[in-house]
Length: 123
Image (cartoon, rainbow, N blue to C red; front, side, top):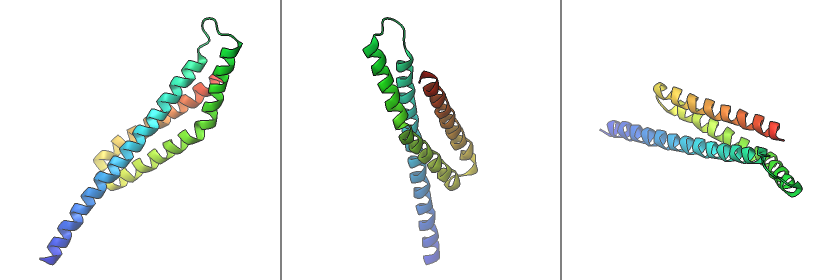
């Protein structure tokens, strides 16, 4: 009876742990994706040179680009953390969930590469 109780308790704890790991991975992916999306929006704004933009406007855009360049390490840490947590979720989950986490990581990395290219081009 004690062994059965321990097995049930172990199964319940494993299930709760898997849910927690999935939630942390999903939150980290969402946070990293938001950061990248916000950064890409800033890069797009900085790339806008249409209309009458004066010297001060150009300086302001350049300052914003430099700020983005300086914050890329923060975004890279978020991306790396998200990918690491997704890998942990794959280890804790059923194999059927692997494609979901792989797709999320692939999209995050693709968006990161686009951001880096757009930033370099705008710079």
